Image 1 (cartoon, rainbow, N blue to C red):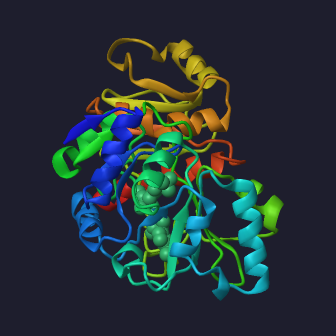
Image 2 (cartoon, rainbow, N blue to C red):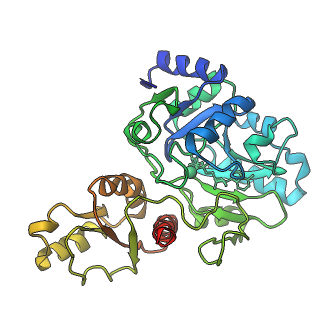
Length: 346
Ligand code: TXA
Ligand code: MG
């Protein structure tokens, strides 16, 4: 594995490697992706191997110009309402943290879509990612660059620690801005469905296309009925078990040795420390997601702080939910899945 920078020379080198079937981890505005040429089945197979990802879980194909959509998706297979939705969403929210599920073109390898009749398409809002995609093949399949089920990487170091030599290159673009994966929205049929809350809020989407049905794997009893193959109940999880509390409920708990506390904002963390929880064995084990209580800032810090807490060897992470509006919904989705992963380990 070789580290690269975001310089034009390094991006050109990485783009040539991608076009030649190699794997390149690269930054996007959401999280780092593990990229391979979407039309090269060998490269796609290596992505699944590197992540230890089940083959039933399809990949997102990244583009960097709207015209490239037609290489992957077949908007002609949508009804007129569907085409209108696609036009609105692409015009207003691309580039950005929104992945659209659309009827696929035949030429897209089955490995990319896990044999589904649909494909996931995303246009990332990140200069390095865009240059890389444009200079390579124009269509780059890229799941988050982490082993299957673990926290997504928000820094190049996370990718190196988690995937090491399983990728040929890592482009270091610093900490990602949004910090949570893209929102996955299925508009392949007559009812638009939210499959994964993410960096683009449901409110933003509904303001454009009206009501969207929300699929929640967390409220269903098993993974069997999931609509999106990757919507496993336990996912996006640190190694450390995590327990989740409703907003405001964490502040009254006293820590036991070895436990970490994750508050939503600085003031609730500060009040808890001031209440006599600052000393001794607890030092350095309390964290907060946002200085000012803003969900976007909290989202940007979530995986970064969970990575840090995971490295402390804690026995348990006690975490507080975000207020559920806007990006708070996506934060709580990830925290609930992390909690569910612990239940699965028991
Ligand atoms: O922000 C992101 O989306 C990042 C960056 C790298 O772009 N990528 C990412 O990819 O999170 P991944 O593979 O970790 O998550 C893709 C999700 C999975 O839950 C997968 O099941 C779902 O998208 N997906 C992909 N194709 C699908 C399809 N045809 N139908 C339904 N869900 C699909
Ligand atoms: Mg992922």
